[in-house]
Amino acid sequence: MEKFISFDEIKKSLEKKETDCRSIVQHYLKNIETKAHLNAFVEVYEQSALEQADLIDQKLAKGNAGKLAGMVVGIKDLLCYTGHEANASSKILKGFESQFTTTAIQRLLDEDAIVIGRLNCDEFGMGSSNENSAHGKVLNAADESRVPGGSSGGSAVAVQANLCTTSLGTDTGGSVRQPAAFTGVIGMKPTYSRVSRWGLIAYASSFDCIGIFSHTVKDNALVMEIMAGHDEFDSTSSRKSVLPYSQLLHFDKKAKVAYLKETLESPALQPEIKANTLAILERLKSEGHSVDEVNFPLLDFILPTYYILTTAEASSNLSRFDGVKYGYRTPNAHNLESMYKLTRSEGFGEEVKRRIMLGTFVLSASYHDAYFTKAQKVRRLIKDFTENLLKDFDYIIMPTTPSTAFKFGEHSGNPVAMYLEDLFTVQASVSGVPAISLPNGKDEQGMPIGLQVICNSFKEAELYAFSNYLTELTS
Ligand code: GLN
Image (cartoon, rainbow, N blue to C red; front, side):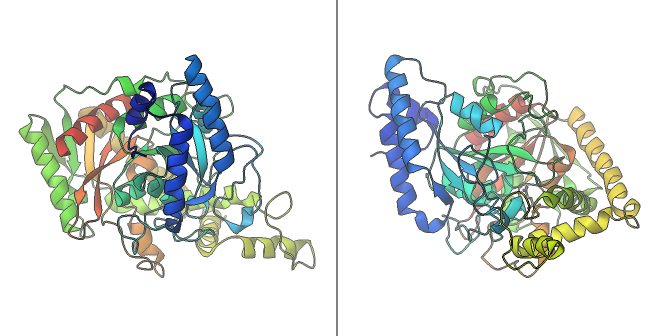
């Protein structure tokens, strides 16, 4: 059986009747079995995926199949799907079965995508290495002694290792872009509110976005145009109309590009990543685009702002997991209070507990103004700076991550070193603007490097078109 990389190839093969959906699903199931040791999948929906494939094959024969007929999708274990378990990779949700389906997934199903299984991640999306998962770590297929990035590590590896055509992840502070960079695939976080959050188990509600992993810009754009748009179940979802991104990929403008001096001069930046980023900027200049250096004096405030606000929101969002209504309940309680305390102490992992405590602290009566309110104000400054910059420039370019994929255990005992991994991804999250990570060569160890491109809010069409151009430039 041939190896499919993109949905375009699948579609052509289906059109020529060289294959059918059942064979495509079988092909991926075989890959999943061979690569089971990567631990990307928490659960494989073998039976239902094959049944779905047969139904879609019938529709194809009748000529009434949807736009995604033949696309096989994996979903992060943070997204609800009726009748299936969703654990947020946490012991506290062990055995929890979804009562409804995430709107984004439903829209893909309505266009005849096939959901093949649930993908491993950091617990509640908290982490940058996928080492914080109740389902165990995920291995990077480029070097199995290294992390795949996080928190959507399983979703990234599933695409990297061809275990599905595209996958859904969630990105609160970089969880789609960072693992995409570490695994050499494309990872897109849309504008905040572009895609409904209904069905996404909340980490930090004012940051959370559902994003997409793919091998090609076109597949990513196609999935986005189907997922995006207003949803009556999420009142924060935007009512702005959605463009057919996948049909607007032609790029023939001269772009105005900015790069932030402080990002490229950061002492944390690995030399090969700096060199490859500079090489792209040079290439753009030689193609006649304008490329300007800009100062970004707020870089040092970005991580503290992100970690204060997200832990505050997480401490509130995660208060619902108390052992009363659903999920894990301790067998060791002797009264109501100890039931709450023990359930949460035993059910949550170390990193999640650290963040709940930090978030509770920054929201506490005596420290609220000093931390939470202050961080909200700095968020506004960062957002205003970013949006104003994007009025003068079409795109901001920077590395996705300061380093390439690191070894397992390298940052385990040092949460601050782990948080530093998010240095370049959180600006777009704090500002709510869309950002994409594209493969940009490899380092001396052969590990993939990511290039991040940021655009102003709701300019997904422009971002995809420029990304498409950049991938042509780098290939
Ligand atoms: N690594 C970041 C964090 O731990 C980002 C996580 C995410 O985007 N879900 O918060």
